[in-house]
Length: 219
Image 1 (cartoon, helix red, strand yellow):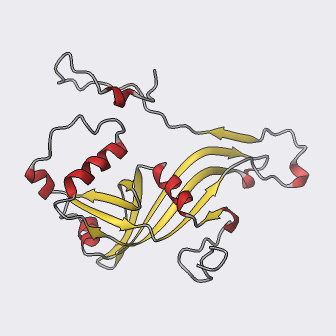
Image 2 (cartoon, helix red, strand yellow):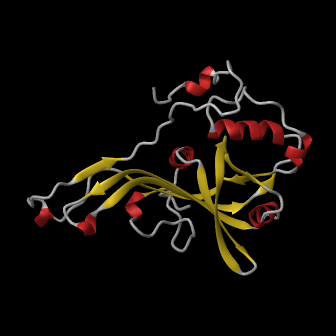
Image 3 (spheres, one colour):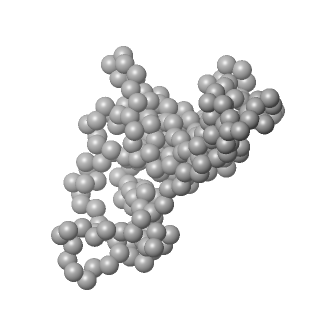
């Protein structure tokens, strides 16, 4: 990093397009990662670029991913091949007075690195925390993992040392000469909320969701 905190020219982390929206601090990275449950993991397999959407979870200062040990993605991750993980959450549609200036408000991040395998001793606790990250309030409502389940799951961690963040907020940016035109301009918010839990059709009567699972859901 330079003294300003911006990666030097030519660095893969440096945001070039709309550089004024870039951020390189850890808190901005955490905010972007915590807003997303899915990341797109890019890697090269058999000479071809691949990009695979997969569930992700930031736990403390690492990003965690898990999947089947025999998949191309998790073979690459387990072998510590270089990967890039990108995430994005759109918070609003930005409608300008011209279609050219329409945009989106968003939080996005790109992480570069090589993953490392989580050992068997750590795996059960971290998988529980991973699931809690995806389904908040559910951590106490599972049976213990079976040995075959742990064996059939690859869990890797990715350091958050190399990254860039890009965020857009606010109103449309119209040309000065368009400001008096009779076209509506503004932001249409996009909100993601948890709905009311729907019981499985084979759930025995009398079993209710954990109280923690119901916090923050739509009434």
